[in-house]
Amino acid sequence: MMKAIIVNKPFEVEIKEVPKPEINDGNDIIIKVLAGGICGSDVGIYNGTNSLATYPRIIGHEFGGIIEAVGDRVTNVKVGDLVAVDNVNSCGRCYACLTGHHNVCSTVEVTGVHRDGGFAEYVKTTEENAYKVNKDHINPFHVALVEPYSIGVEANERGRITKGDKVLVMGSGPIGIAVMQVAKSRGAEVMMTDLVNTRLERAMDMGADKVVNVLEESLTDVVSEFTNGEGLPVIVDSVCTPRSLEEALELVSPAGRIVSLGTGNKPSAIPQVAFTKKGVDVVGSRLNNYRFPHVIELLESGAITPEKMHTHTFEFTDVKEALEEVMNNKDAVCKVVLTF
Ligand code: MN
Image (tube, helix red, strand yellow):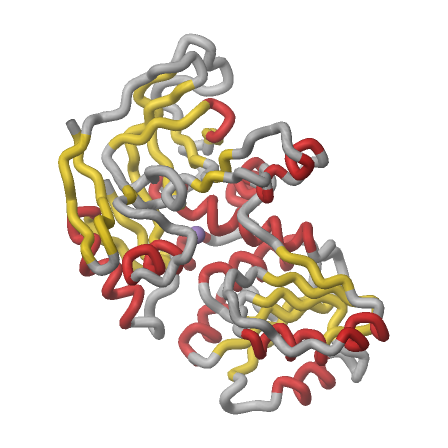
């Protein structure tokens, strides 16, 4: 048996004894979990606002640890390796999978959302989902931050962010920061927004070129100055309110790109002419499309700094306090890591 964090129903989380997973297939891997990052979507499962979640659920989709056992067909990793686990599980046969977009597989299953996740002492995954991280280069607990950075890489790919692009990242939470650091690694110039000054200060400290508190300054004016009146070639929206997408269409340059990370159901009011006239690409960016190797390269080169994203640590048995901290201390919290 082992301990796991289970959300039985909204606002009811417990540490429960459950069976320890076992190898059933040649591709299987058992991981002794070291660390798991708490995401906004975990909070959504906890407080009942994540429409994709089903209960009861072992949560956790940002995690990794040390391989404890491997099936007889596993060749790329071995017992003792430190790995980060990709949470995307796809069918391999649908249109999206066959055209190289397995992250939007028609039957995609996300570990920790649609199936039991990584907030447990042990997790079973497969060789394909486990990515080795060099123990000499990173704090082992930061395997938990590979997944949020993979969202950053995906958004950069979807927005075709490249050297010299002026980019606006709306929102300075962990995902906004991840998008920014990846964009900086590609030579883009990045401006970020938020409502909270401590989050903007962290964004600057982690590499943003310019930050705007949209409660204090006119974003339109700052963007105009930042782009010499041209508008922004790329906008990545990690705020994801109905209004933020409308605003992105107003601020984007002709021939620009808008990347939305939103999962909300409320419609934005967008006149068709707004994107036709400017010839704008508006794209969605979901999960990650085999981006773990790239994140691990960025980690090992020092281009991204998970140690600055990681602001709080809790023992996994204190998960309730950790979730409360994420919900109630938005000024100070960037990424909360649970240790196992
Ligand atoms: Mn996440």
